[in-house]
Image: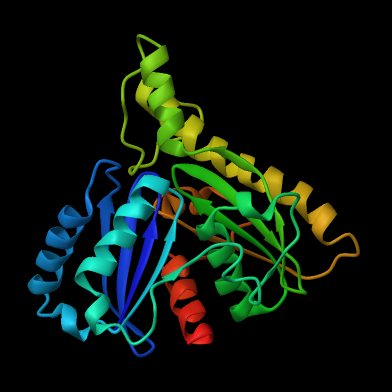
Length: 263
């Protein structure tokens, strides 16, 4: 089995692959104070709940945008999983995946590992110009050319950050749940007005940015595929005309692909 680990700022998403099949997936809060021993205890319990022994795990690949947690995860894997691994722990970086995608940015080492993994996974599926929108702590637009060049893309505050800022800075604006839609665009009460602003607003923002990116990425009208992923993707996609598909396991699939290509 292959253990795939995607450490994000808000959540850590992990998955277990048996061959080509994703047989288990977990989404847990990213705690920057978590130690290697605590990680081992937590995942040993999760594996036990589904009847999996750690000795069945023969490969691990890790992508992280949180340096402190990356170090804890590396230590955890070396202490508790290394005896059973067929290949060394694969830590994703601009250097370790340079043969899978060309990073055409000013500073390749600055690009988040998850953004590169998403770009590789999507390009392998479609092999055309792509925009991958990851709705996480931040919302990132990852632009990949038909030649498998990672070109960069806009970054903006995520939905949760925006909602927190509203409720923290505006005394009369409450914390709200946007999982249920507003009744109409013109909100007739505070909660519906906030829901409308976030859902319709981010949908329009996404469509506007995609239209601007399209002009640069596809100046001759070349085909363009737009994908969405991340924990909040399902909330915004219905309010965007440009998003064609949601792939909630894109990053895990990309990690699986990278491991298979390397070993």
